[in-house]
Length: 579
Image (cartoon, rainbow, N blue to C red; front, side):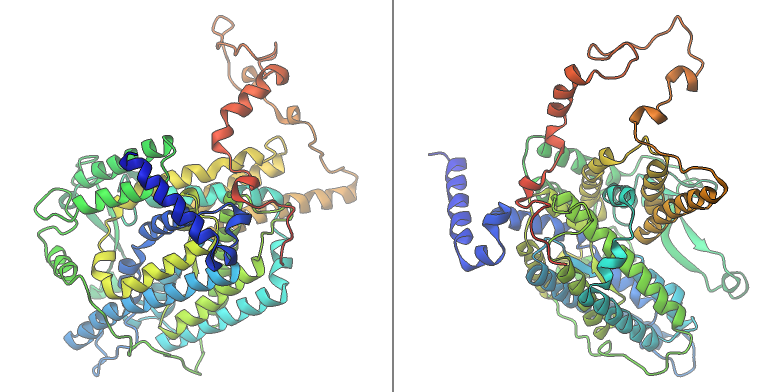
């Protein structure tokens, strides 16, 4: 027996032992056709895809200044800056603790392979729009945290009472079909950028985004040119940059090694190797840790030296005493922030959970999935728990799609992610040093795989087509799942509301029942010369449309590997659903 056969035999033995144990029965391994090795592999892929939050979230939230106060009111004094640095390190621990709680709650209560952590976008809104850079906003840090706690409580009430389900049912059918692809495009958008990806797409002064991938020395940082920046020189820089000024497009070694990781993962997936994400991310991460190379994660700069010194600690535990329970009864000016926290968190969570559940093949025709009430409750509890540790809303992460594509089907994946976050409390220097270009390729691939449900959209129905398209295009371009859902739902309601109003003046509502109703012949859209004809598929009829009898079977067979059926996920849409 060869080495590979021995490993397979060992894996089967482990899968059998765990499957027959209390763990396997609790997480319904047999019902969902899950295995321990697949859950572990999926959890590792998910965690490696979202581990960046341990480095990014502390940096963003610490910009709020937290509870730091300067005696002279100067937010740029040495004492205030030292306090901010201390808060940043404490946020590493608090982020890990809250993510640990959220993941375990989701795994145990909802039995879903979805990991939770402080939401990107929500943390930026908390810092720069509510509290303000170093406390320059109209809402205090303590009042903002109290608003997060209240928002979580409202969300929990809606989830437990079932009101959330009634609200979710308002989401139109085309939006439900378009949400997973929209989230996939959002993921791919993240993977193509620098902060969380390979850096191919960067900012542009004229066109907002453009082709980038220039090396660090050729990057020109973008700045928010506010009145304070112009008059007082207090300018807020971001990670966004442009390559327009100094050039060097597509010359970044980090981008090319990120593309190499993308190719490795894609090829391994083509050969049905489910450890593709782990191998690709792990390989690029390790080779990026060596210093004095063009792809190093620790360049010879002040920031790079500081990062390497932190990395060398390997084990490090920070206290959270300055962040604990920073609540207040003074909630003046907090109303708008509370409403924004709620609707963004509600729509983001709804979109993420529905999208990932759809990818697992467990969503029924009404847009519900098993233990949905418990899933939303776990998300709300995590938000409330996170506020105790000074965090913005904790939410379900779309990066969980990496684990779903790697074979995750149960809550054991979420609990394992929680265990990884527990380890990161001690090994934060290692976990926080996974380069963005190492995980960017995984996000792009997962994004592509999540676009499968676009085939379910009734493209011949103009109301469905526009609704689905707006959902897909707005979500990544606005960097918000919530805004994508709002665009899709709003378009659908506006069109059908218009049809309803026109019916009062005798104009009947249009009916789209035939796919050919909205089919545009090529010659109607373009002036094509009669002497130039596109080659016709042998299975097409005389109109150029596929012949159902001859092409139907081959088409289905060709797409068979790209579909995840409910049976593959171990559940059926007709199974009993807890709402």
